[in-house]
Every structure is written in structure tokens, then in C-alpha cells.
Image (cartoon, rainbow, N blue to C red):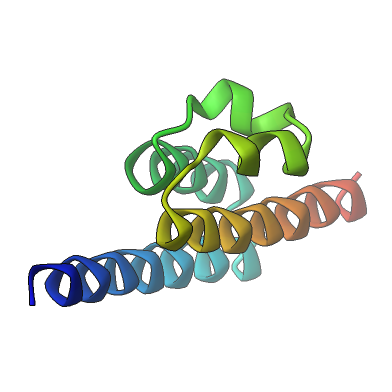
Length: 91
């Protein structure tokens, strides 16, 4: 029961964060999307945003022991890559 509550809260937080990040990215507000992504890495993955910004995905995932949080981190890393691509396309 407690584990189910934990997972539902994590899923809800991840969905909310991804919606904000991808919405900002699609709107071209890349700096704000980056700030939201940093906050999500810190709160959902417990990862320092500076490390998450430039770190290798496999290494970052190895830092997270909880499988549920690891899945959240993987999704955030996908969004990180999409944000990088958007920034590159804008140059």
C-alpha cells in the first residue's frame, strides 16, 4: 500500500514535470525548460543538476538505485536530449 502510494506520487510528479518541460521546449522557451529539467533531476532523481546536464546517461542511471526513480531518470534523460537538439537547431 505504501509502495503503491509512493509509485503513484512519483508517476504524477514525473508526468507533471515532463509536461512542463516539453511544453516550454515546444514553445521555444528553452532556458525555462532547462530550469524545469534541472529541478526535476534534483527532485525526482536526487541528482545534482550540473552533473545531470552534462553527465553520461549510463553513469547517471547507475547513481540511482531505486528502479522506479531510475525509470524516471531515463525519461528525464530523453527530455534532456530533446532539449539539447532544440538548442542546437536554434543556433
